[in-house]
Amino acid sequence: MFFDNPDKYKEEYNTIGYGPGSDQPSTVQELVNCFPQSNFSIEVHQLHPLVGVLVANKKYIGEYPKFRAKHNVCSD
Image (cartoon, rainbow, N blue to C red; front, side):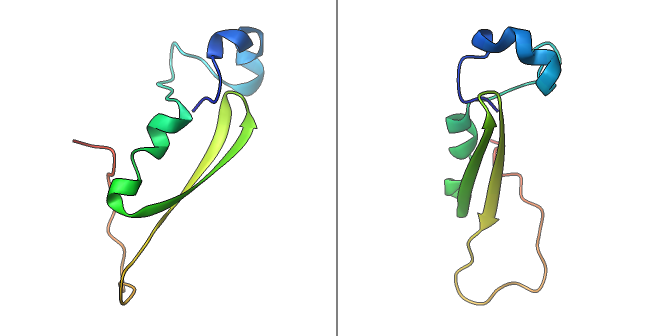
């Protein structure tokens, strides 16, 4: 994920492991927008303008389920 224009940080690509040739990066906002529709709470932690950690926790209404199903929240 990136928080700023990746072109500004080309000299840092190797250091942070970013490579638009092999990665499929998204903006923070694109990723965050995937989750609310599936009832997730989101935390975003920026480590670098091109690196971050997104933590998504499923919000449950009523009794917490005994097992968790895998969610593909960004598919059509």
